[in-house]
Amino acid sequence: MKVMVCHFVSDSHEVMTALIVMLPLIVVVEISLQLHRSLFCFLSPLVWFFLWLPEEVLTLLFSSLSSDDNGEKKRAGSVGVNYGILGNNLPPPAQAAQLLLKTSLRSVKLYTPDQATLQALAHTNIKVVVGVGNNVIPQLASSTSAAQAWVQTNIAAYMPATLISAISVGNEVLTTDPTGVYSSQLVAAMTNVHSALVNLKLENQVLVSTSHSLSVLSKSFPPSAGTFNATLATPIKALLNFLYATSSFFMVNAYPYFAYSSNPKNISLAYALFQPNAGVTDLNTGLHYNNIFDAQLDAMFSAMERLGYPNVPIVVSETGWPSAGDPTEIGCSVANAQQYNGNLIKHVASNSGTPLRPSAAIDVFIFALFNEDLKPGPASERNFGLFNPDQSVVYNVGLLASNAATTPSSPSTTPGQSQPVGKTWCVAKPGAAATDIQNALNFACGEGAADCSAIQPGGACFWPQTLMSHASYAYNSYYQKNGRNYWNCYFGNTGVITITDPTAGSCLSSSEMLSLGRGASLGELLSSSTSSVASSSSSSSSSPPPSSSSSCLVVVVSQNPFLGFSVTTAADKGLTTGGVSSSECVLIISWWVSIWVLQNKV
Image (cartoon, rainbow, N blue to C red; front, side, top):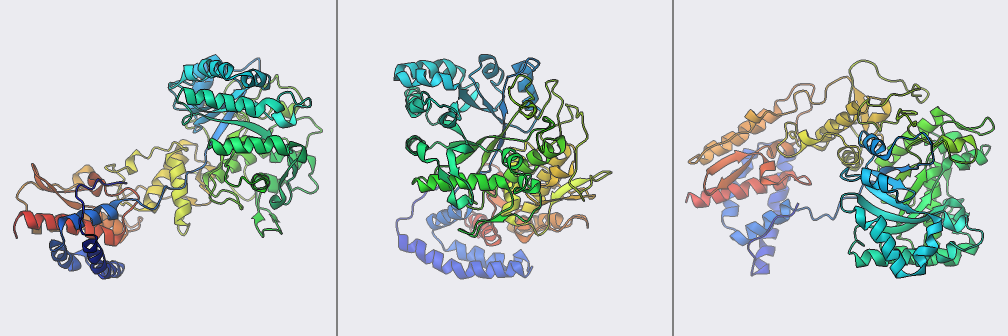
């Protein structure tokens, strides 16, 4: 949150002096609050202290305390889906778009710029990655004018109604082009496409990349030894230079299924499915891996770093698990597919990155939206879909926002984990790390499409304004709307299922928002503040009392030159974004009370 500062301090020494004097007061305030002493006990001395500070200093302090200057929050990863159309029984694009809107999926990747599909995705707020066929690469590489015409026809013509966010030029070009016709022109084609976007002033909205298979690596184990195939070093380096220069990302098709099915003796199924297992330790780095997905990505990160590009992000352009296959194909089952994709979604939601890149936000595109009956190859190739062509789910991984689609087969459960019965809720787990809970909360209210309106400033359940309270509300919203399955309450192991309604006794009605008219005395203002704090604290016995900081921020004394003084929620003053500590709360209230004292010439 940023606050406009209307005054400037001419003497920097004055500001520093004020800050130095305030420091011990803040410490005393914090200690007092921790000892649960009344706010009233130390509010008055602080008010008088602030009366002697210049208004410019107060403004500067107020803006700095209520601003979020800790840098941007870590961006959460996202889960999207690949929408292929190699089937003779698939629903029309308009129906597919409506199906997507019934899920929590808000990004989709296409393999071609299909006109009907791009039109169907207009005004849906779904981000779209548009694919370019390998056979189109020579045309795009031939000239900037050819690329300009292609971008104008297949990208710009659909924007801004359709939220096109990236263009993937070719798919696995470097490993599926034995003649080298396409691979030798790949970077030139990407460069021309980017230039066309620059000409249209779309380069900041639409990034350019290309998808690769893991076979571009000659070595992937241990992850720290990840190395690109020597024969691809030159084109890969040119590609990485382009991605870095344009702030784009490296796209990789990562399939733990293929790693497991090709080597089941040395790779356990649990390791491939994100299930509990002994894991593998990279002896070079000491990093421990509990799943092969992270190991695959870190091998790619290591390979890029080895070529001098450690900061190019990765997007997983394809990943998934087949729900059926030929009798000779290992591991193909509904249960395994459900476990893999369900656990993958949880893994992305946990926002834990990878062991080598724990701060990385990994975006993934599950393959695929539908089972496509015209795909060539073994039976598994035609059974990677989350949905059947009739739009029923192949298995439930909690993506549906309602029970609009039917499930032909019962969902499987992890051994030793049973589905709760009766009325249940999902809440934040006590003792879970605050950063993990915050990340999961961001997912639930963002990518997870939970209804978080009630916990927004001014909402019925905004108070108590604590992370646990808000997270529990958001978790439960997501849990209820997605079928109340146990995996809908995972949230990176920060959620727990309960039989107690998390909203009971914790949501305030509008009548509890106090208001006083012009002419209110300071005593009336403070007593109203104290009453609201007490009201907020007297929740039901099943709900934990709000923290000192949330109680303190139930009301803020504010002044309006036309309406007089009033006691309103802190949200009305825009002071709650990013959270405010106990000491900051006292300073904010003191600030407004001091203004009241000054204007009333006490």
